[in-house]
Length: 202
Image 1 (cartoon, rainbow, N blue to C red):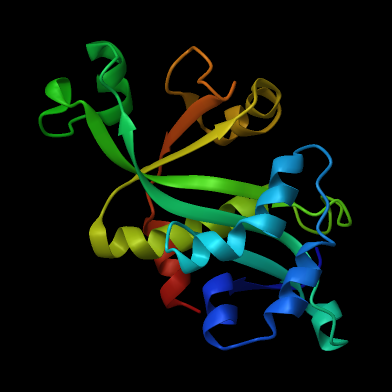
Image 2: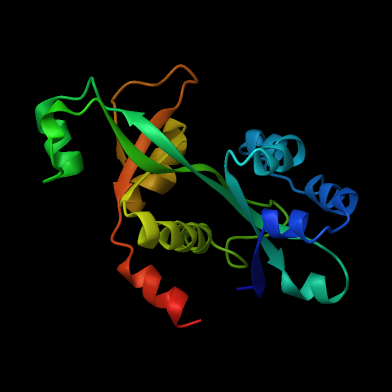
């Protein structure tokens, strides 16, 4: 496992780092399996950050950083979103929400959205694993959850990613059908207690 540091993109922007150098480093990020990840980081991440639509976190290679090179090993973006559950059956609502007050009559539910999450092709899984990236994402969400509550996390992905990655991580399909973008919406309930402990022990 390579040493890395998680840096919020907003911190870089607020500290008046050279944005041109940051954007140049983004252009070196490659993810051929999901080119949307490349496009977001290069063309949208800064705009979304400044508009406060979502928050992007960068996993930076510490060895490279010591050499003055800003290398993004992986990144993730999180946001808040209201999820439409109006078409869910009562049974599926129970399975998803448990004893949530007013569950059966709810039309929507607040959730934490993992908008983007991926690893740079320049790094192998034994250098930074998908599970490690996902855990860092959970850790970031847990800080917000401690303040405002909530335990529901959602994301969108293709069928292959669901079967190969997220199914084994405890995610389930919200609806059995693909959405308009030909993606599945997945959800997972998370007990953030362990992540709170990690935050306060660092």
